[in-house]
Amino acid sequence: MNNFLVVRQGDTERWTLNDPGSRNALSDAMVVALFEACLRAQADASLRTVVLAGAGGAFCAGGSLGHFASAIGQPLAEGAHDPLVDANRAFGDVLHALTQLPQLLVVAVDGPAMGGGFGLACCADLVLATQRSVFATPEVTLGLPPAQIAPYVWQRLGDRAARECLLSGRHHSALEAQALGLVNAVVADGELEAALADTLARYRLAAPGALAATKQLLRRLHGPLPDLRDEAAIAFASALRGPEAAAGLRAFARKQPAPWTDEPPRSAAARVAAPPGGGSGLGRPGAGSTEGS
Image (cartoon, rainbow, N blue to C red):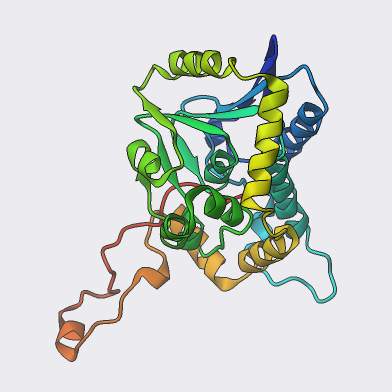
């Protein structure tokens, strides 16, 4: 199965993350295909609009770590090169490339946008979402830093809202994501395609050269983000090999609370009253995968 689809209609391309069985988790192959599509689009003067969507009722569950399962919680041999660094840096390259597209980039979210999927949305010019969509950056609840996506979340949402998302892993509804500034418009379930068509028609009033020049000026206005791709990749790989990620991902797989969610009792009486094994009642870590493959 082709897990990344490109469909051209006139001067618009639709890029679809196409692995519904994993909720379109970002495999290595998908990351490479998305990066190559960005490079091609940057050189295509006839392309005016890119729509990024997910197949099968999900946008993107985040990164796929299945092929790195044996590395989770395992320290790297001294002097060895860590393939986890390369894989995570590749996702950082995709995020950077998306922000450099001269075309209008519209992300259409229908269903979950988790971790790396949240980061992809933060790179868009416009984000449309259905009412059933849900957004979260659950990495910290799994024992991992949201390393590559953090700068883009911060730039899109601002410091206050970015901290709320990145440091808590809290789930946000589509309307909450709109209030945060991530989503531009929320539409009824089943009406995403019609809303997308209306949006694309409205933005066709913009001349493609003028739109590209305006996007470049806006990037200058913000100022360039510090290039943290290498640092972020090292931090992510180190955390994945550490004990917190091993415990967090194991708890997530078992649908149990991560060990750090247990709060110490406040008194001797509380210790007597506490049930065996404690537990804070916070529930299992947020659903979704990690930020990038």
